[in-house]
Image 1 (tube, rainbow, N blue to C red):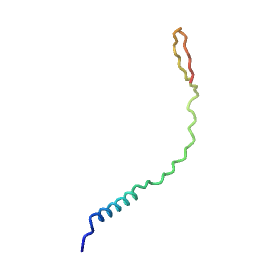
Image 2 (image 1 turned 90 degrees about the horizontal axis):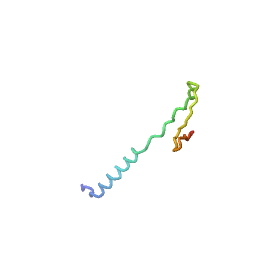
Image 3 (image 1 turned 90 degrees about the vertical axis):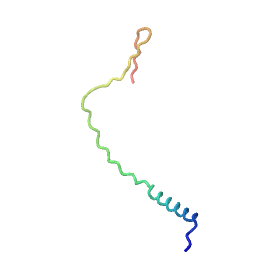
Image 4 (image 1 turned 180 degrees about the vertical axis):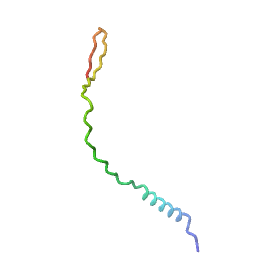
Length: 66
């Protein structure tokens, strides 16, 4: 019995390898994320005041509120 030519064997190995890689490269379907629960109520009554004072040359402060 004659062995197949080297080119045929390499081509067959390449096809089988690429087919196996494609089968294993599939990503699993995304899982459903759990539904968000109600946000917790605020823990304290507070008022945040965001502001920065920049001193100017004439000793006046520039107040910026975000």
